Image 1 (spheres, helix red, strand yellow):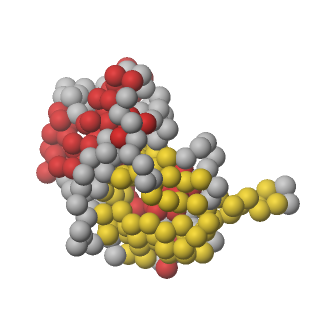
Image 2 (cartoon, one colour):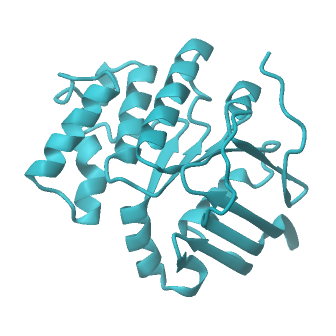
Image 3 (cartoon, helix red, strand yellow):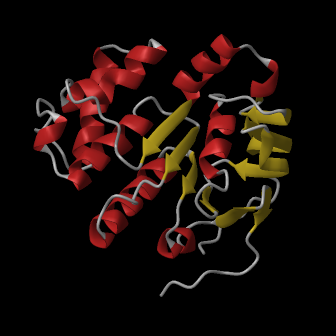
Length: 240
């Protein structure tokens, strides 16, 4: 794991006593139980756990897409569990970036239009913002491809657009759900390195859901969900 000193650093994200369950077939299924954790500014944290353990649910709770049964979520000083759904939506658009395993680019929009979507949703679109967005496209190695549609791009190129889109509005927090899971190992390593560098340059906190030991080994810290419990991984993972 890489080192990042968090001594004296104020947490960007604080989760306290977070619980979430779903009722199905007449039974309650506990997804998270009394989860508590902090994520610090500029930190890269990997989130591990078996399939169906609640990793994606935790991302939804951290972003305010979903609400917990109990507990608090505070992001950048804002208590997401105490504000309205509309306020959570506005906060998410302005302060949180998302990256998904299957890219989630809109097929009817060009690369540039996909890239500018978060700026339009957050009301921050303008000439200067468009210029910065195109500069970001250059940084992810896709200069000159702004008029291309997603189906003309490779999987790795689509994920590069997705990385740029997640960062274009300068979010404080970036949530990535298996961002390398649909890519070959070489392309995945390239995407991870790109994501790390761009997030670090912008001082963004990065939380990556992954099954990959290689991704986890590159993180500053590792959190694991098992049987509804969230805990920090105590043992350093192998880089092999």
